[in-house]
Length: 167
Ligand SMILES: Cc1cc2nc3c(=O)[nH]c(=O)nc-3n(C[C@H](O)[C@H](O)[C@H](O)COP(=O)(O)O)c2cc1C
Image (cartoon, rainbow, N blue to C red):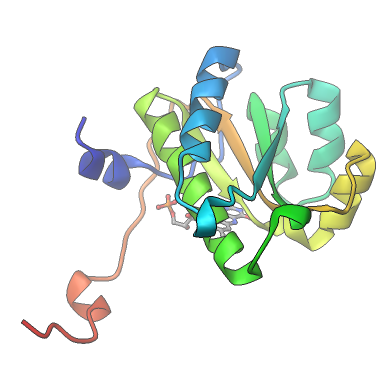
């Protein structure tokens, strides 16, 4: 599939089958994440991968999207390593690119995903429950799994997004 088709086919998926995602596929997804661009190539992202049901359940209590986390086979928490950060805005942008790479790679492997930001409201609790130092600042949760459903989405028309076209 061409990259532009993959980009358009990716959807946020919030219900999953009870089917495991292989660790090799998860590694490929993380690998795509780490190849994202970053300012000064500082690669500020760090990952925690959770497939363990009990731990996933524990983390799920910190978001109103708890059902999504419990249902998904795999939860990836993406952190910013503050000791490795040079500019918060640029590092945050780089982590966004890293996450999008992961979502697109997942789709290419036939795996559905959802980027969950709401959990950031209780990010300190996530660190505490996993005994992760506050040096690592939670940026997002990403759930992965197989889904029977195809969800729909839409976008604003391109014409409404282009402020100027100075050709
Ligand atoms: C920064 C960010 C935070 C998001 N947080 C959540 C979230 O907490 N819960 C959720 O269900 N979806 C979340 N999403 C997914 C968006 O709702 C979704 O991308 C948007 O509605 C467009 O749908 P699509 O991804 O299927 O095209 C988030 C997406 C981004 C980029």
